[in-house]
Image (tube, rainbow, N blue to C red; front, top):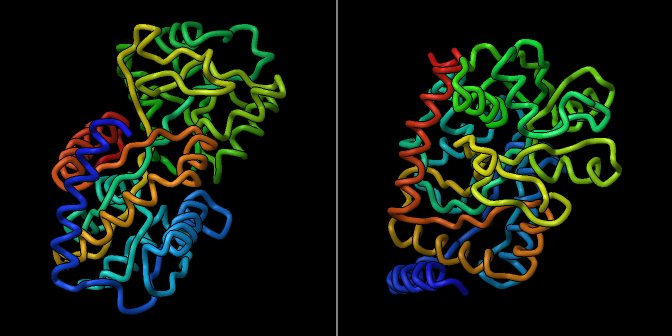
Length: 325
C-alpha cells in the first residue's frame, strides 16, 4: 500500500471509529442510484459496489441498485437530492452534477449533496481511423487543429458540455485556438461515435480508453494521444500523453459517491470507511485496471478541494465553449 493510502486509511479508520462509537450502521435497505440504464457504465459501477459491500460484509443490511437513467444524470441526481438526511441513499456521481447546473440543465449544486468519496478517474483518449493517412500521430492532429479546426469533424458522447466535449475544448485552448471553432457531432454513446469514425464520417473522436481498446487491437482505430497525467497501460502503453507532446492538457471523467445533504458526521465516516475498504479489494482493483481507470480515492478536505477546483475549471471550459449560462 502506498504511503498516501496508508494515511488515508488511518484517517478514515479514526473517523470511522468515532462513528461506530455513536452506534450508527445502516438500519434498512441501502440504495445505490445509477444515472444509467442496466448495463450502462454507472450501472456497472453501482453493481460492483453492491456486490463488494455485501460480499465483504461491510454493510449489515440488503443493498439494491436503483436505475434512474435520463436527463444527463439529472433524474438520478434529483432522486438523491430529494432524500435529505437519509444515509441509506448513495448516488454514483460524476462531473455532470457540476456541469448540468452551469449550462442551465439543472438547479442542483454541490450544496444539495453530501460528497462522500471520489473513486476513480476515466481519462479521455483522442483517436482516429487507422486508415487516415493525414492523421497518424498526436502531433498531426494538433497541427491540423491549430491550422483549421473546422475542417475536422469531432465525435463524442453524450451531450454538448460533456466531459469529452470539454476535453476537446481544453485541447484547442491549450493549442492557442478558440474552443468555439470545434466542429462537434454528439452521439448517444461512445460506441455510436466510434462506428461513425470507422465509417469515415468523422476525423477523430474523444472517448474513454476502455471504449477504444478492442478497435485498437483489431487495427481499425489508432489512439494518437491520451489526456492523462501519465501513460495508460496495456495496448495503450505506447501512446503518448498530450503533455509528452508539448501540450499542457489533462482531462478526465471522475466517478464518485454522493449522498443527500444532511447526513451526520458519523454516517459520513461509516461510508468513507466502507468505500475505502471496497477500493482495496482485488475485485475492485481488477475492474479499475480492466477499464483503464486511474485510482483516485479522495475523501474529506482533499475531496472538497478537488470539487472546488472542478467547479472553477468546468465553468471556465464551458464558458470557452459558449455553453455556460
